[in-house]
Every structure is written in structure tokens, then in C-alpha cells.
Amino acid sequence: MNKILNNRVVFICVNINRDKEFEALVNEGTALVLSAGYTIVETVKINRPNIDSKFFIGSGKVIEIKQLKTILNVNKVIINHNLSSIQERNLELELGLTVFDRTSVILQIFASRVKGSEGILQVELAVQSQLLSRLVKRWTHLERQRGGIGLRGGPGEKQIELDKRLIKERIKSLKVRLMEAVKQRQTQRKSRLKNDVFSISLVGYTNAGKSSLFNVLTKSNVYAEDRLFATLETTSRKLYIDANNEVVISDTVGFIRDLPHTLIAAFRATLEETINANLLLHVVDVNQALKERQIEDVNYVLTEIKAIQIPQLIIYNKIDLREELIARIEYANDGEPTAVYLSAEKNLGINLLHQAIVEKKLWLKQKKNEEKVAYEPWKQ
Ligand SMILES: Nc1nc2c(ncn2[C@@H]2O[C@H](COP(=O)(O)OP(=O)(O)OP(=O)(O)O)[C@@H](O)[C@H]2O)c(=O)[nH]1
Ligand SMILES: [Mg+2]
Image (tube, rainbow, N blue to C red; front, side, top):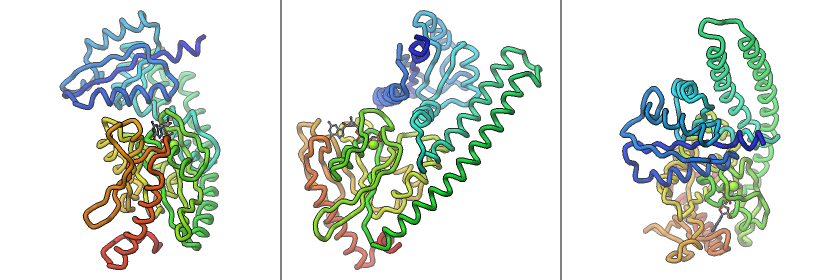
């Protein structure tokens, strides 16, 4: 009963300077909050020309939400933006509610899914350090609230010191386990490189359909679901396209805009297969109003992890939801395949994807021969 009550939240979305894509951003935020396991009791949409430095939202709205909290019986507010720790603290004190910002929600999703292997260890490391700093701040100001400013050396402070030590120890052991896992993976990759296998990595915005495509291509059964960050680990399989084309394909974690920096850093290990791939299949949900922004966001993360120079084939997925679209390959003027329209779920255009991969490989090889390609992925 208490748990259910704890999950009830008011969700605040601020439309800053009349963003045309505001509704799509609200939908994405809603999916994020639901994926973290909360129930949205009320969504409050606010128009503002700019953000308020003290509360992020205006003080009038703070009063409105304070009134809502009793009527709706909620004890949390989630805001679809990133707050400074000062704004978060001011809002919590004024509302008497727990306030989570967007980064907190993303970290909670990751934290709730952590399991034992390498990439996940990295993520846990990031989550631990970020959550720790937030927790300490939260604790400190709650203690102050209770005891008044100037009360030092109280039980809260001792508890923080204890927690800090425990988390530092945890971080140390995580680092040791990570080193071992990285070593093991590098050995595996070296043996694959020796065999000269062309490697392909699926990348894209979360929920675009990467795992669904991976499953249909490799006849596998990895977890695919209509929730954000369904996949948190990398899975690789061999894929025989034809007698001359055997490739290794990897499915991995999806991206989202404004990813916390600690997580991008953590992705580096999870995405080692991606960083070393010969070709990226950049999967896009063709129905998304935000798809252009999403492509940019994915490319931003790829730049951060130094994978932006790897050749890409854009995969416009979910064409079954759009009557006017048919499965096809799109080419540049010089014959390079640049995009494939398909549906992973309805198994439409998968043969065209096979064809496009083979053609892209040939095109890259030809370019290499012409010595026009600065980046030579097979020459590692
Ligand atoms: N209509 C339709 N739905 C699809 C298609 N491909 C995938 N989906 C659905 O889209 C949702 C997300 O699919 P996933 O394969 O889990 O997406 P993902 O990119 O791996 O997502 P993350 O692992 O969360 O980053 C699921 O509900 C799928 O059933 C498609 O071709 N058509
Ligand atoms: Mg997935």
C-alpha cells in the first residue's frame, strides 16, 4: 500500500520559449518516468520565456503545486529537466516533497537494472558516484532543516561519513572487477580480429527497435520491450549473410538526449564493441516526431565516445506504422547505400538490409582502394 503511494508523482514539464516540439518532449519524459516505475497522477505543463534561477519554475506555480499535493495525495515531484542542486533543494524545502530531475530518473532506471557483468559494472560505478553526491546533499539539507543551521557533528553527519566510506570501498571493488572483465573482453576481441571478421554494431535512440532488429537478423531472443533502456548490456552473434559475408553483429544500450556525463563515460566500456565496429547500423524510429533531434543526439554521444568516424547505415525502422512507406534502400549519388527502410517486427525489408550491408562493405572496400577513405576500419 505504502509502496503504491510512494510511486505517485506530479510530473512537471516546462515549455521554455515555445518549443515546437514540446508535446513530443513531454511524451518522451512521460515514457521515462513510467519506465522508472512511477505513476503520474497529474502532468503540469508550464509556459515560460526562460527558467527561474531559484525554483526553475515560477514561485506562483510552486504555490499551485503545493496545493495539488494534498488534493492528489502525492509525495514526489518529477521535473522533465535537469535542475541545479540549489534549485532542487529550494523546491524540496518549499514544497515539502521529494523532487527528482531528469538525470535522477535516468540513473534510477539504470540503478534498478544493474546486474553483474562488465558494462553494468561501469554503469553501477557511475550510478554509485552520482547517487552518492545527491544523497549527501539531500541528507545534509534535511539534517539542517531538522536541526537548524549551525548544528554540526550530529548523527546525520556521522552517518554520511560511514556511507561515504562504504561507497568508496564499493567503488574500489567495482574497479578491480572491471579491470578483470575488460582484460577478458580484449582477449576475445583480439581473437576475432585475428580472424578478420567484419563487425557491425546496432546503435540508436532508446526504444528505436535495435533489439527487435538484432533478434530478427540473428534469430535470437534478446529482451525487447516498449520501455526506455530495455537493453543495458552488449550481446554479439555471428550472422551469415552469404558464403562471402560472415559478420559479427552486436546489440547494445540505447541513447537519450541530455545523458548524464557520468553515464556517457560509463558507456565507453559497455560500448567497446561499438567503438571498434567496422560499420554502425544507426536505428531510427521513423514515426518519431523528434527523429531528426534523436539522430543528432545519438551522433553527439558517438562523438563523445569517439565512434563518430565509423561508417553508418541509417535504418528507418517501424515502417509498418506508416502506410505511405515501403521497404527500400536509399543510395547517395555515388552509389553508397545510406539508408534502409524496414520493419523489424513485421519482418519487412530484412533481405534489403542484407543486400545493403553487402553493398556497403563493397563500397567501403572500393573507396579504400581508391584511397579516398581516411578511416580504414579493417586495418586495425
Ligand atoms: N510497430 C513496430 N514496432 C516495433 C518495430 N520494431 C520494434 N518495435 C517495438 O518497439 C519497442 C522497442 O523495441 P526494442 O527492440 O526493445 O528497442 P531498442 O532500440 O532495443 O530499445 P532499448 O533497448 O530500450 O534502447 C518494442 O515494443 C518493439 O515491439 C517495428 O518494426 N514496428
Ligand atoms: Mg534494446
